[in-house]
Length: 273
Image (tube, rainbow, N blue to C red; front, top):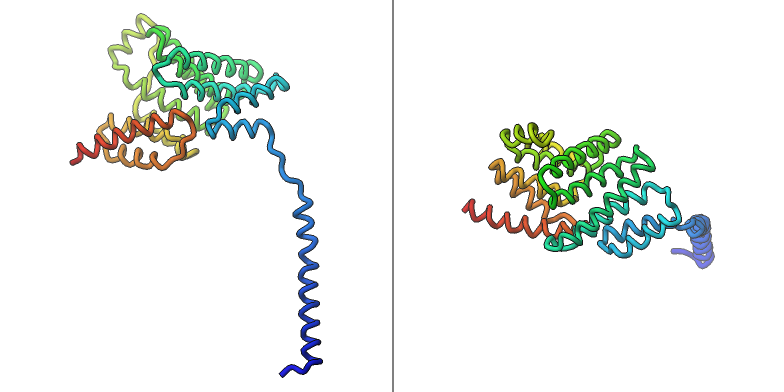
């Protein structure tokens, strides 16, 4: 049993230990409080707005920053990316409004490249804008543009082999090129110019590499699933599209892709039964 004297001694000791413990924490507390909070740059705020699909806010900030920094190549390719996102957010039926944004995207991307030809993203988003504009032009112009798209993608991937956007687009390029039969290719080479070359194997390789770099991008699952369906590999297509349903919506066109995949999954499940 503790005597009053011993109890007081024990109490004082614990009080001393408590004060000592607190004193060791005080510098840490003040150090943490004194640490300056990281300031988020306007460009980072615009990037966040873009991924939240708040395109007007992103456009306002990027444009304001560009006026203050007209030689900043990063701003040009980010504005090209934004213009493509804006175009994709417009319903497909309103093609002229979409084309307006794709043309602006190409202008921004070309400005980026003119300032710095070694900027991989400038070449990537130029290829993207040209690809988006390719639907509403004649066959001869479309073939010319296809060659320009491939050239820009090759440059982008030479500068940055792990550019997931360029890899994804290269996959789409190879998939589209695989639809051109040997006769059309021969006639095209004779009368129009070089016809794009590609096959499903090259397309699949590009999409899978893009997915290994960023597994969130819905378009890669969708495009790869379409290749699997065209090759008769329905099981793999179902697996890819099912996985895509759990991915975050990053751009407006993801909503349309998810809707299409849900329809395809329903069709494939009915076929299996």
